[in-house]
Image 1 (cartoon, one colour):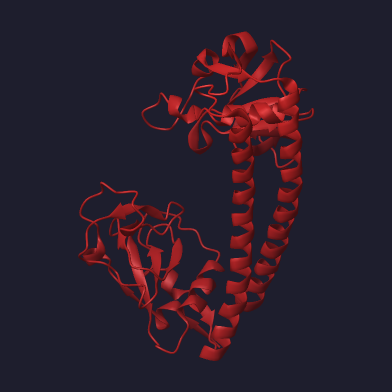
Image 2 (cartoon, one colour; image 1 turned 90 degrees about the vertical axis):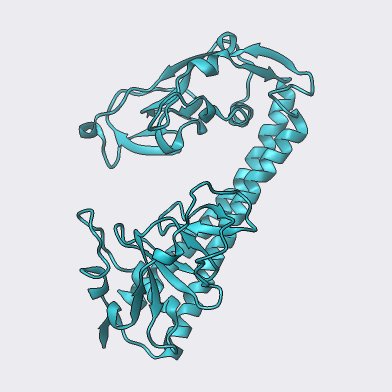
Length: 345
């Protein structure tokens, strides 16, 4: 038997929980200010009035325009009235069961309008007893937590590499280990990938790399050498990635077109350039955007190649561990997707 979300969940307008000042703090001991979207926690506020006490009664935070949702079990405030706060109607129900059901709904708003009352609340969910709900939530929570823990392991492995880099090479901007240094213009020739028109973007073919890996594919001419790619615009502005092998091009990113001196191991160089936070050179008022000029004018340490190679071997060993963990994440996600289809499909 199916019933509508509006028969299981009641909504509350967020007006009394809206933060008065958007000058947020980074102090995590304060009250978090939330959105339901990807950003989630915008910052923290000292305001101690008008707080939604989700620590004692969890809620679902629903973005009334994008239909994104979050299960919240801690106290919070919100940025604006663009959200609705959802509560369960039946005290015996498990609210998280309905949250998971909402994650399985394939829905994307077609226009910028509020959707909970008019559309989203009309979606149906399979009616189950509280015990059945609890069993399902326990299973999905177990998988979600396993994925979360594995992702945390990836973060820890990345931090391990950063820690080893600092241990071996110190503060590269201040060169506190007194390595030989050279200006970027003496070491590299940078170039910018051309913007690839939408009509040339394919679902398979030659990989096109941006600042965060493969952005899409094409049949355009190739670049055939190992190098470093730096994201030039948007969310991945300043991201540094090592690209190995042939058959690739880059779109809307900066790359090293030529190494004027053969004095770098690429694994080391990727980590080295990542220390410079190229995103700080953003010169655009709206969408983040950087140029290659600041990179050319920087001074880079040039440690002995033997030391670079030692670091690179360490990175390769960590990468093997990361591969194993990522495979675990993929398998867990596949199982989670399967369970979601079983319970809510």
